[in-house]
Structure formats: structure tokens, C-alpha cells
Image (cartoon, rainbow, N blue to C red; front, side, top):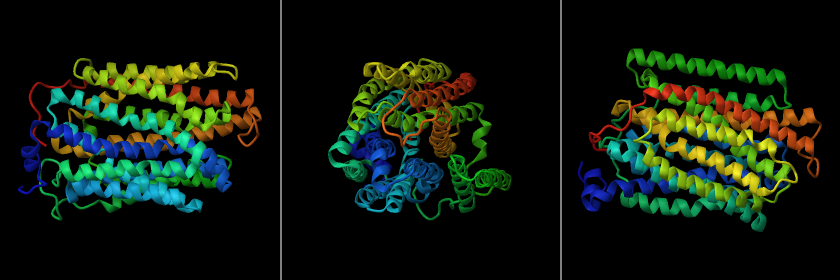
Length: 492
């Protein structure tokens, strides 16, 4: 394809460094999407007070984002084939920025929730794109280093987000955290028009001749996910019959989706998800690890700020300060782990990281009201070291065996399963926390803190440690994951 926006023209203009400039461009947008998903947790207590929300309704600020992000990930391969990298990426950044502005200016909770859903839709589309680029634009021996460098940049978002967001909430109120994504989106738009190609993956021209979107599969997946999350919410003091009906509907919808995907594979029709992916044993177990890991990771992302503010009675600014050192350590660890990806087997990297992450959760009951905050910071650092080993290795190890044509679908599928686990994890942590609070006779609406409240939080953290234990067992099935081959990868 000719033209200034083609992959050939951009390579010729920027030389050998172009692939790194391309990765940097999508990294900024991914940072914005990740920041939008995590920073709002710091503002949930203030937002709940402003809108007089119950804990159940306040949770939808996080889970609504997660549902939208989870479902939209499955549309990324179609969007890239239909519109190309640049138009897809620019569209997501505009939607993410619009969500931030509307959320920050809204005076009604439904508008805030709608803005979060819009941000989630944008975040879901953009997050599989970097993995597609790393596996197609970089030579195999460079993929670990690229993943490490990308990870170092991306983790700055969750590391700096709560710190800056906590200060903004204390100084300017909860609205200010919505505007944090705006400068990132503006920079990403500028970079997109300089470095992101107009072509689709593989260098093909994007256009109407590409595959059609599987609307039927997308509708079934969306209905199943929504029913699953609403069912989990209803389990928290809602109507048990309604909860059971929603969970049953989720099973029916997801079962219908699986039947539809199998039929599409037999008849050769275009489908939302190619089930041939799971014929690769390494990818299948990598996806299982990603799902379980997502439950614990995103569950803890919801639980930890609530624990610090309502369990330990710390101000929002302290929450960010405690998490900041662990974010810096995570960035350093990812840089080191990225260079180890091609030297150590995938299962060693992933299982080691999961073990450290589980240990950080299992140690939380050692914290009491008189414990120094440095202990909490140390436990957070331990967990972030574990994450540093997992993040650069899991996706690359799981997707390396895939045929090149399946890489966009594989990136979307493994991210979808991780985010589906995350959406379940947020609701699961909230359900377990309220259950244990009721057992111990405490409530988050009571002023002050208590030993009973801390016990409820501690039991929730132990549950996360046990969930990670299941992921460790699954990660040992990644022993067949290939290391990076010496031959160069095909051009993007």
C-alpha cells in the first residue's frame, strides 16, 4: 500500500527505530486506559457520600467500567481489519477523553456511570493492540525486551494514578480524577497521526472488504457478562430469586455463545472468537491462568484502597503515597523480567510471580491498627514484584505458538478472559467483604474502625491468596510454552 500512512512509508521515514516509536505511541493510550480503570477507586468513598450511594451502587462505578471493557475487547480484531490501526486507535482515544470530561462535569450519578461505561468501551478496544504489535512488528528475540519496556511505561499509570488521584481528591474533590486522562489522550492523538499506520495487522489495507462483525456472538457475550455481574451484585443482600435467575441467564447466554462459535467453526462463518485458539494447549492454559489471575488482581485493586480508607481510616492522599513505592518497584521488576523472558521458561516466570503475589495477600492479616505503615508498603511491594514477573511473560508465552493469522484474535481472547476474571473479582470481593462484615457484626457505614472490620478485610485477602493458588497449579501446565526462536518474525 502506498501513501504517507502506510507501514512501508512510516518505516522508510523513521528508519529502524520506527517499531519502538510505534510501541511508544500505543503505550501512551494504554496508560490512559489503565489509569482510567484504577484511579477512580480512590474516589469511591467521596463519590458515594456526594451521591448518597449504597456500597452496592457505588461498586458499579468500577464494575460497569469492567463489564464494558471486557465485552469490547472481543471487537478489536474486527475493528483493526475494518478500520486499520490508526482510525481504531484514534477513535478509542476520543471516546476515552469524552468519557473523562463528561464524568468530571456530571451532576447526576447515571451520567457518571454512562461516562465510565464509555471509558470502559474505549479501554477494552485499545488494550489488546500492543500485544498484537509486539508479536508482529518485533523479532522474536526482541519481544521480551519490548514487553519489558512497554510494561515499565504502562505500570506508571496504576503507580502514579492513585498517588496523584488521592491528592486531587483531597484538594479538589472526586470530579478532578476524571480529568486525569485528558492530557494522556491528547498526547496519544498527536503520536497516532505521526507513527500509527493506517493499515490493518499484516500490512493489509483496511476497508469495507474486511470481515463482518459477529453481532450475534457479541450480543450473546454482552448479555451473558451483564447477567453474570448483575447476578453477583444481587447476591449481596438483594433478591435471592432474582440473583439465581440472572446467574442462570448468564449460563444460558454463555452456553449459547459457545454453541454458536462451534457452529461457526464447522461452517466456516466469521465468528466473534475463533475456537481454534484453544486447540493450542499452551494458549488454553495461559488463558485459564489469565482468568484466575484477573479475579485476584482486579479484586485486590478494588479491595486495597477501600481497606486503607475504611479499615485503617487513612486519608485518600496516604493511600497513593503507600502504593507509590510499590509502583516504582513494579516498573523496575518488569524491566528486569522482560530481559529474562527469553532465558527462563514461561512457567517458571509466571509461577514465581503468582507465588509472590499470593504471599502478599496471605500476609495481610499480620497488619493491625498499631502496625507501622511501612509494613503495609512492604507487602504491597512484594505483590508488585510478583506482578513484574507475570506481566511480560504470560501473554507472550501463551501466544507464541499461535499461527500469525490468529494473533489478533489471541490477544483479544486472552485479554477478554483476564478482564472477565477481573469483573468477577471486583464483585466477588465486594460480596465476600459484606458477608464477612455481617458475620463479624460490623458495617462500612459505621464511623471509625474496629478489630471486627479488619478481620473481615483480612479474610477477604486470604480468599484472594487461595484463588492465586489455583492459578499457580494451572501455570505449571505452561511448561510446553516455547522460548523465543532465533529466526526473525514476519513484518507487521
